[in-house]
Image 1 (cartoon, helix red, strand yellow):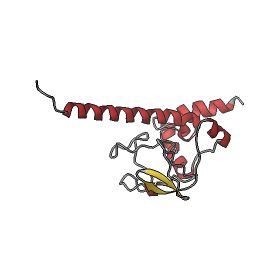
Image 2: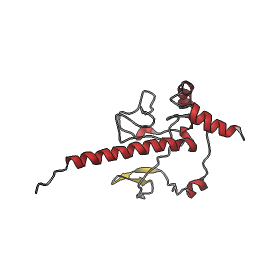
Image 3: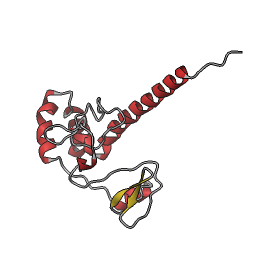
Length: 164
């Protein structure tokens, strides 16, 4: 019981990161074979407001369409692919020779509108775990907010000024 917080919070979250020599050594193995699995119960997802739906068959007007033809009016989509990351739908030159996204802690320098969370060792061993993905998601959300703010600043600066 005492070992679980030590393992999850200290070792997986702080020690095994891309910033430490030990983490950089462990990372390729974790990416290649995966880390430990931690179960999320369906009732916990429901309690958090997550709606699970069937297989997505395509899109219509930029929104997901399920196999039964249902159009999902979603603000956000979490693409859950099971035990394989399923990057085959990404038609951009962002994957390396191993089929993994080339990223810096989830941010893709060459495609600033595309980000990842939940990948094995995105930043640390805990990146695929509920207590670690939040840190990664917060970083991605902050980067997205900065990008939006910068874009708004550019469009306001480019707006014509009416002279009286």
